[in-house]
Image 1 (cartoon, rainbow, N blue to C red):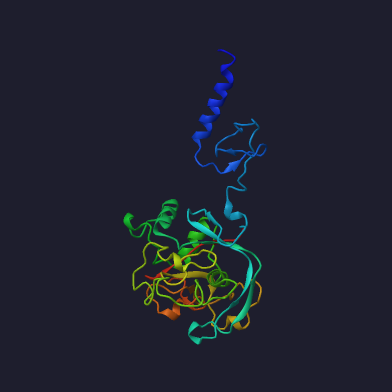
Image 2: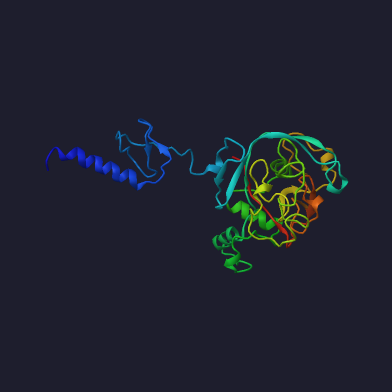
Length: 294
């Protein structure tokens, strides 16, 4: 081979490798040029490339900003909820959330952007060798309902996840401003599915109301389906709950559900409203979303 052709061949190889990777997002540690995701050596300066992704399990590391998104271990999108303070509860007796009181969450956490879907639950059942209750693939992307608190916990534990505490759920919905609704202070009918909002529509695909997103990017936190929380329910718990990271009562007969549902009245969709159901309850309007603390 003619020696003058070697530089040309090298340039062609660089072009081929570069073109094989579309929209590469990483850069070489030495020369700073854009590199492909699967490159082991930089095609420009030849140095070995160090892994640039901080972790292969992003839910085990803290986020950097509210609303940052990752893919969780169950395949669903999770959003980052940073630590913070807010006023929890309500002075409306219908909310069963008296008295209003300050809460401080000292640790951030990842929260499911949407409620768990039938497709996600199907994969869980297949992995566990369990029968799937309703084999209808056309509805796989619909939200999962008819699930008990124990069912939800079993799903979470399989993936190393958990249910959010009641305080975490409310903070993710209301934010530091303690808004009455996930999107702000004023109710509008185009931001959620309930008996007044988007109409009385049975649960289906989540995320139909992006304008109803909370401050951290979580969707469907008002209406759609009611969501299990980790806590036992005690109507008087707020009178003596700690300010910092309230864990919920130690015992009880019912578990907390939050957010209202497609069959709820407007007041039941307020972010402060507290619901309660027996852990074995499998309601047509009850589901859950996952959480994880790094």
